Length: 346
Image (cartoon, rainbow, N blue to C red; front, side):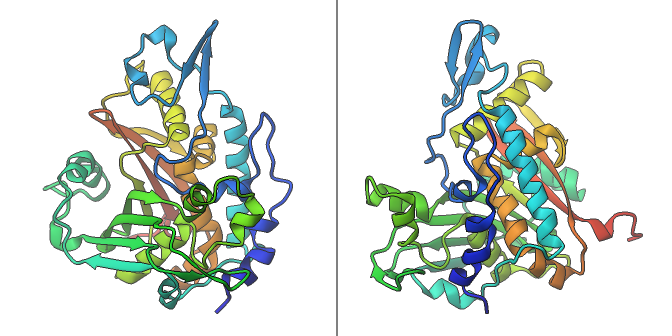
């Protein structure tokens, strides 16, 4: 098994240099660490005439139309970054970028995993996603029966050994919670708080280099999603759909607001499924992929492309994204269609 330390020495997380985009966008390397749920504080502002609107407000859709976002500052830079993510994904599936390979034993290093065979506390999720399940799978009853659903939570609540220094250090209390639908090749991330973010909060003023020395082997949301999926998966086609329930991240919401306002005639509070759909290689898809709530999908594809190919015998993934809202709650779904399935008779 390849260790994370070995992986990172030549991996995109530390080795994909030259990926900076202008207008202040950071390189892809640091961006992979933004894995928290609404805890990242990258704030977009929007300009219309002389008016500046802080897009971090969850009530942006209630502002007069003249005050709303016309184009979030940094939107073009997100498109640039998203394009570079797509290039890295393609390189990963072609084997030009070394991926990661974990086994479940890695979770013993500081993580507690709790798997519930039948999720019972997701009435809100059911309301928000019922139409999506009807549309994707043709389910007459909408949301799947609870017997098909597994809830997996991963909590970094025990002392762990760091990757680089091999020191034992205190837990970060980072976590990832999701609902998994193995027979549907789908997962929903419902809440997460990333390890790098927690370390930064625990050690005020720490540099990125110092922070990285405190990372455990498993630290990114894409790592956690992949490992959690492999604890519950029974689908021969593997993971295809990655959903994000109730987006709170300010940066992501600013982009979604802009697209809702532009393409839904000013409506943001109720944009029902299928909402807005964009190809992964469109400007809109690239911008969404580069947001904090899209990057986990990009890194999952980059890091585990070879694992996906080995398990599913696919050549690559074709990306598209849906964004929709339900009574003001913003949701995102990535469809990672295996390219080898296109045109195949079922």
